[in-house]
Length: 282
Ligand code: C2E
Ligand code: CA
Ligand code: CA
Image 1: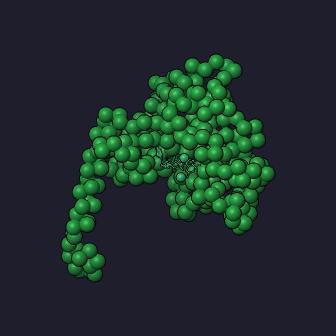
Image 2: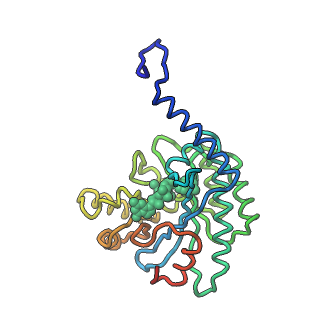
Image 3: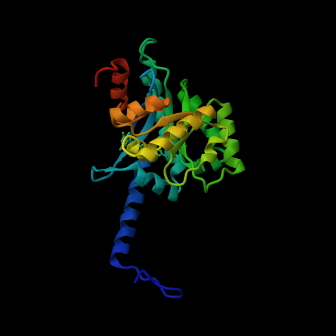
């Protein structure tokens, strides 16, 4: 009986029991994966829609569980947050991706090398950590990272920036590390993110992009967001661009940047390097 009223004792049924066991197993796997550095990194290009050039890449983490199946980051990142592993995880992703990106960029000659930033997803609560900025700067030094770094973070209207987060963002901004707002238009994101100064770029969620070519009201809203962003000197990345129709609309509206399977899926660092060298192939 899980649906108990007030004052009743909840009794686990078999399904709940199984779910708890599965979760414990996943938790244990995640802890050991982190210890053994069992994650793989993929890099998805972000494209300037007018020039067609790659202006950045986003790091997306892949984890293959003990049974060989990929466990999606939408599942294990929230778990890492819950069990207090998110700092460790994010800092691992930051350090590893900065090393890989550094080595790859350094291996290109000046003609091949794009002016591209590295974008890394962070969890919102990390900005509340007073030591995050210092540890990040330590990673930059340790890895001798010398390219542009952006942090992507989802914004929600219900999580008002407290003073601490704002301080961290301004601190990072002064170190030349930009903050990009992720998943705009999904769930409860709000227009207030256009007011908060440290955000240089807003990423429109792919569920939004998905419907611009066949839903008139979505198209009108998306176009208005692009215009609004431009008035406020904020850049826009449209995520989840999958079709030439979507691309054409975004170009017409003057949208700055796009990301999605139409350009490239998330690639391992070697494939990314190949794409940068021979942009017309692969
Ligand atoms: P996100 O930051 O919104 O990342 C974009 C997601 O859309 C990625 O899913 C990407 O593979 C997928 N995608 C890209 N282009 C297309 C497209 O054209 N069509 C469709 N349908 N999907 C596309 P992924 O890699 O499964 O990641 C899911 C989420 O997990 C990410 O959403 C991000 O919030 C989180 N995440 C991934 N890696 C990390 C990480 O290293 N750290 C943290 N904190 N979060 C991560
Ligand atoms: Ca992202
Ligand atoms: Ca997303």
